[in-house]
Length: 274
Image (cartoon, rainbow, N blue to C red; front, side, top):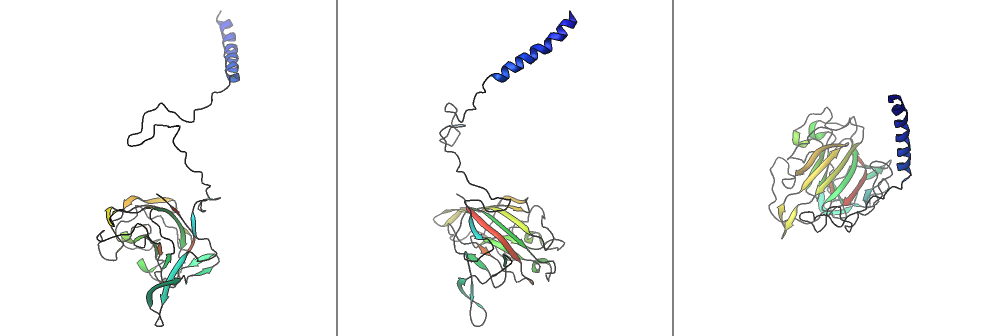
């Protein structure tokens, strides 16, 4: 009797599985209308009526600008930027004119004073790639130094800190003069460094800051700032605060720190965020 059962049980299992496989699969629901409201929201959990996210085509390869990005530099021109106007004595006049940075092999050569975007930005996603030369002169902050200033006042530091000791809040990925990066994730000089940054502009009321700016920074794919509060506009050898009035948006500023040879930049784009 046991041997008969042994022969028939596998056959029954095969027949049952085959029958189930022939049954049409029920489509998965695309949403619900009978679920509870999400606290603090007008939408229900998995709400079928909630608008779907807009479709945005990503770049063809990692680091390329997505379809909704504002491309600031693609290797062809500096039309998105303004530069420093200098007087006959070679000193800045305080006025801005055409960007004087040169393009070499599709790369932006950071030389001739700081540059500003013509457009103004608040909260955003920002991408930039940059490198310093292996034979750059100097040490600490005088070696492969540059930076990006969000809203022309909050600096995310760029510096060659590969086997180049410097103060902690001056490392690559630091909120300069305030918060060091969690780790030093730079590549050797001569290689491209990749920044991906989410900047949240400060919240204002009547021009006064009621909530600070925040920054999340990835250096070469490594998170070095995680929604870190910015204490105020960047200062050198001084503390800072949000005293005074602030704009809702302002240009990016890319820093020329007078390196020899100059830092280079490429593939610069930004996405505005709510």
